[in-house]
Image 1: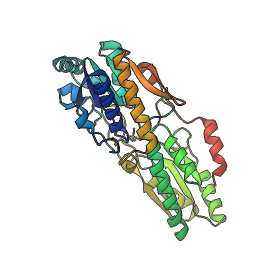
Image 2: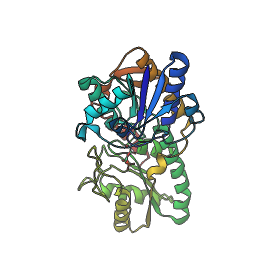
Image 3: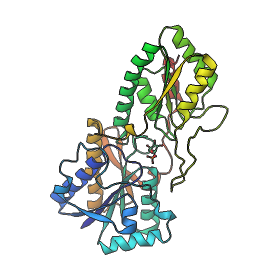
Image 4: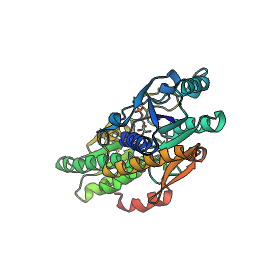
Length: 342
Ligand code: F6P
């Protein structure tokens, strides 16, 4: 049996741990051959692949990024994309494909598997943790740790100058990174995409924090939006899945806070620092287990499925269900954290 593996969408810490888990178990236990497709769906689309064997996955467990490269190529938007993928898989005698990705990459895998008969297994990844059907995606824990450390550091410099520090974190549709890192880092305001924010209310919280002789830290997810107005964007360009490039709300909010409170404010945009570097122990553990279970799906011919974490168990869910809706922050959870605002 020959199995193809690809990593698509934004990279995240733990991708290499999945690849290693898949290949180690697949070669050692089942005697499979592996091919790694380069740069997400571009690889099978163009037939660009490398051999993956045990020496190729040695030493990659703690490495961030992906040894296969990644891209946001959408084969469903490419002329003859499905036929080209099927031809290239047949040419390389690939009998199963493991796609490691977020909602877009797995959305393609769901359609290839459900509508076009390509035997796919999905593995959920994204630092945003916004895939439904799994309690956690790997990459999220690392991103939260990085953001928390940054917030810890920003507290001391904010207090030395008695300034407002606005920290913009990733989170396109879901505020999980903002919520977890904001709570862990003791932020005074946390703003998430799921709840539009009132700038005057943010300014009240900022002012009350200063009144207590502390400097406020405001954590804002890149997808958060003010109550009156639209998403604040620096760049209007779209990727091939139709997403705009986010970022800009942090800078905008800092200016509004300065204008309305008269206090000095600065912005830190954490950006891709949250996605880079070595995965946390939790992400290595989760990614490795996802890899081991994904190759078991292949072994059992259980295609059209995604591996998922439920409690401490790894389960299988239909790929189509996994990508049908996003997992966003429950308003009740957000309300719970609100006790620390201001
Ligand atoms: O989807 C994960 C993510 O990190 C989002 O939080 C962010 O908006 C996006 O990717 C950034 O994508 P890119 O690296 O392509 O600019």
